[in-house]
Amino acid sequence: MTSDAAELLARRAVGQRYGIEPGASSFFAKPTGDFDSAIIDNASGAVRPDVREWLLSRLYGFWAARYHAPRHWSTVWIAGSGLTHQWSASRSVGEPGDLDVLIGVDFPRFYAANPRFRQIPEEALAERFNDEFRAGLDVETAATNLNGTAYGITFYVNPGATDIRTIRPYAAFDLTHNAWTVRPPEIGSDWDPRTSLPPDWFASFGRETETARGIVGEVNRHIGELRPLRPGTPDFVNSATLLHDAVRRGAGLFDAIHTDRHKAFGPEGSGYADFYNVRWQTHKQDGTVAVLHRLKDLWTAAHKDATERCGGPILDARHALTLASLVGR
Image (tube, rainbow, N blue to C red):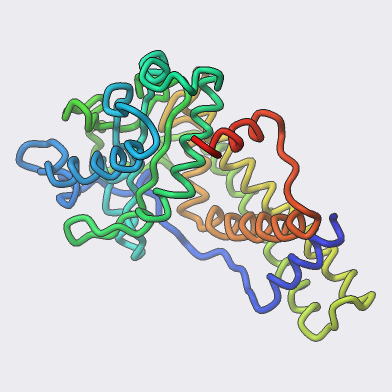
């Protein structure tokens, strides 16, 4: 299937160009002293009632069509840079705000209200919920206007996190109980992670950025080689194979940076200022994440094309069970 994927990837890539452009990360932004008034009422310090009601109604309207009594077995938080005093970072580069809706599920209560799901383990159910969100809810809220401001809003069930503090959020507001669970820290106006955190961290991130630049250069070179070639010829196949390998390495680097970030918020992590989160935030600011994400999307799309050509994807047993549970419920 690799040769099929390389050909399909080449066809998708021709006409594209990839580059590293500076991005933005709230982690490095200077604090404003206030909150984002489109989300938080600065007078009360709480999430605006209209925003709270809108988010809860979207979630529970979605879930009520699928499950019984969702308000009884879930707690809903919002997190993300929009809840901090560094909320303006994305606006400085014209990007929408980032708002994560994170949900804790009390599974004993869920099973009691929805007994037909008792044979599905908790972790598989969390996968099911998140698959449903990606397919049917996130696509509707990816470009949302809240009080005149654009946001990308995503919904996610945290497996095993009925208390959001177990994943060490930088800030979290409990929409269910209308109260802060974790208030964002007060940061001085001289905040500069690049001088306050270990310099060898940033040296390591810089080496990764140079690796990414090399990969992007290879990708663009092979795309240029492919443009005048006829598909199926030996030269086309050779350049497509080299392009496929370069994109594979770019997608792998993205996966490493993205997946390792979870370590920052796990049992052994130290949260927002953990090495692995600072790594992610640095690459967001430098633009590395954005271009590697494009390569990951290209890789994923090409391999999806290839699996469909071969008759469909091969899933691991647990994910196959989860997807099967989506049918006929």
